[in-house]
Amino acid sequence: MQKYLLKAINVVNEGRIQPADVLLVNERIEKIAPNITVDGAVVEINGEGKFLLPGVIDDQVHFREPGLTHKANIYTEAKAAVAGGTTSFMEMPNTSPATFTQELLEEKYSIASRTSLANYSFFMGTSNDNLDEVLKTNEKKDRVCGVKIFMGSSTGNLLVDNYLTLDKIFSGTELLISTHCEDEQMIKDNLQRIKSQKAELTAADHPIIRDEEECFESSFKAIQLAKKHNSRLHILHISTEKELQLFSNMLPLKEKRITAEVCVHHLHFTSDDYAQLGNLIKCNPAIKAPHNRTALWEGLLDDRLDIIATDHAPHTWHEKNEPYEKAHAGIPLVQHSLLLMLHYHKQGKISLEKIAQKMSHAVADCFQIKERGYIREGYFADLVIVDLNNSTTVQKDNILSKCGWSPFEGETFPAAVTHTFVNGNLVYGNGQWNESIKGQRLLFQR
Figure (cartoon, rainbow, N blue to C red):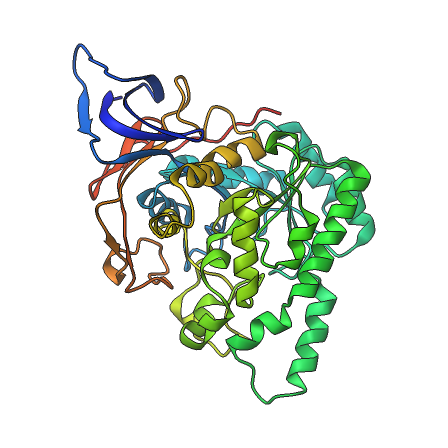
């Protein structure tokens, strides 16, 4: 593997920004120092004026393989991720078939080993009747990111609404339990109430049907189960102000047993945006009224919300443009998540150090990922170089997700991802690709 020397680059790591040289050798960061010289062959990259961040680790994506590959597959979505500075991902079980057995779980790892340009892990799926298979995942706790529970509606048989099953999963699982928290009955009641009041529903009704109360009730239920069994619980895509009262910043992240995530679309869009974007921003949980976005930013910056993710969920243009009730829920976001946060950095909303913390350091700590998420000597060289003096305009011809569209089309971000290294391999550099070396399976220190 080629050696790389990043010269005079601004290293963003562990709460500090410092200019340094960084040497990458054999998948790892070999040395970080003010001035490094190398004997022999090395590719030198001038980092003056640019910033080096740890590669983004996205703990919630839907890459659709197997079974739903008309929307996306692991190859296309991992490539989109790498182009946006994401070097590792954790993928959800609502594929077709759903990831309900150990064999199906390992099939995903096999596909990724052959096709993924980014590092990868996959959640084990849960249903009301696969408890034995779920508990077998305990034997792989150093090789699987976690167990996923849909406590609100999802496709197929993924909804777990049997309390006894939930109780046994929370009591018996030794891995991190990741939950989608929405209350199914409350959603159904809201839907019927609103349908009785108007002839035709639109995307603007989505945050009323999937409202703040149903999110809170489901998150509260998950936390009660976790406290009962001292489970390691991570609640995904918090979308409401009310839910923030359930989380604390009183302990360091590594000591928390209950953690929470916020997604980029809930930090960016509000219910006001349905008028322009309609079903394109239909997602579960819903994008809600503006006061929730304000609160989510506050919770992120004061560490009640621990990490930033995407819930990247591509659907075809046709699937998104069906009438509201038929339109699929989900947004493709993984290529532009870091650029969006850099946009907010340029606005003075969030520091580069905080971006590195919430998109890399904290994810590695939350999931106990081995030797990733930081710019440290000896760690895997998962790195992204960004240029804050450049810009990126989102256009059809540069969208890499297989679905071919983005809610950001036409927008210009005031930054650019210039290089992405995965395990010391320069996969993406100034628009050029090296796809000869694939990503690796994430390992966990549990």
